[in-house]
Length: 157
Image 1 (tube, rainbow, N blue to C red):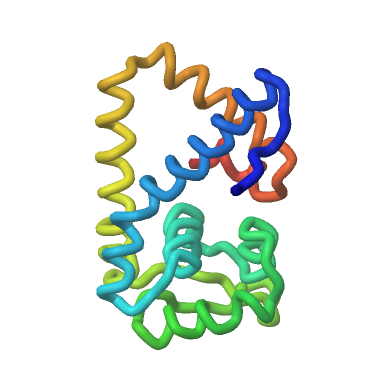
Image 2: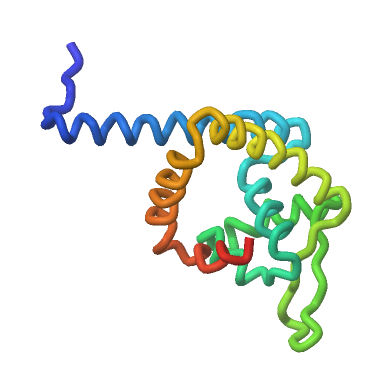
């Protein structure tokens, strides 16, 4: 027989919230992941497209900080997006060693497809639960995000 974690009622309530967070995250990414699969890309590619699309001219180092990944982890998916014609790089005019990242037209179109389903899903939930709940949810998400290096970019979105 399987043993259940021994916990107080309060802890069980928190476990349930953790599970809900997991299932919500899965639901939020399910449709974009299916679209991404058709383009032979993964969630990491979607994240790259998202941030490059919203911050055109982002440097590779800035993207590394936002995504909190190593150069090694970013190298292959970034190269793949370049090979697919979704991202282009340009040297910074002040420092040629710095590579600036931009979406191509096809990269922008792909990002729109990936993000559209998430925006529709989020809007449907906002319509269902109401703005007061979304304000509280947003505050919770901000508290989770506040210590992340990339959160300083949120005000620019």
